[in-house]
Length: 281
Image 1 (cartoon, one colour):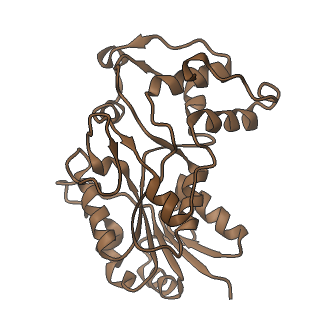
Image 2: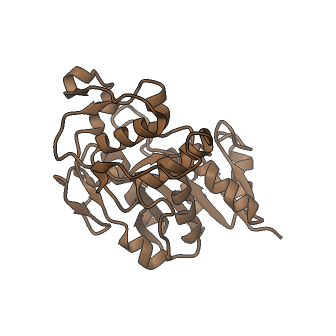
Image 3: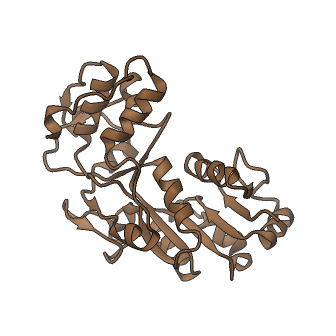
């Protein structure tokens, strides 16, 4: 019998995990807009959970203080998850602002703006889950290349601001590597935290587009969610995932990731590997 994976919330990232495991012979059952079951269909969800070999949740917590459960999966199905092999997609936002310093899984959580996420993170850990803390996620259809082509890329004048990121395919390989790994928290991030402006510059170079102007946060008129992105500054270490899971990112930096996306979406433009930008030396 094929092993079975149950996914709560089959969105952008979880769908890549599902596709990989399906190719490996797994049967995948899921909730979500593109899933096979409705989250509210408790009878069938509980039946599917009972037969599942592994459960993955990518459902974010609700809005703290607005009457929504902090984690709707645990609120409704928590007892049915006990004793199951579990994985949970969390966020490196649980670490809060580190002033640009490196953070690993031993760093305290819950001190930043993502307090609801930190609480959900802790609840999944208490259930014995493998909790994957993810930085900025990008991939085909959701990368800086797309934003540059759509005129939505911004260069913000914040010297010293650093972010980590990870390609969606590297998240999938990490989750699969961790299916039989010890429970605990794992950071899945690439090897080169850097300022967002460098990513914008590389995307514009690959797309043959002019650079957007350098702006202050106020001039850029970002949405509250986008503005909050710049409120924290940290570098995310991935050494534990490398050592314990035997994982390493295929796309070690944003350069390899963007070039791969560019080659897929514009093969005539990126038929040969572009030269490394001078700012990357």
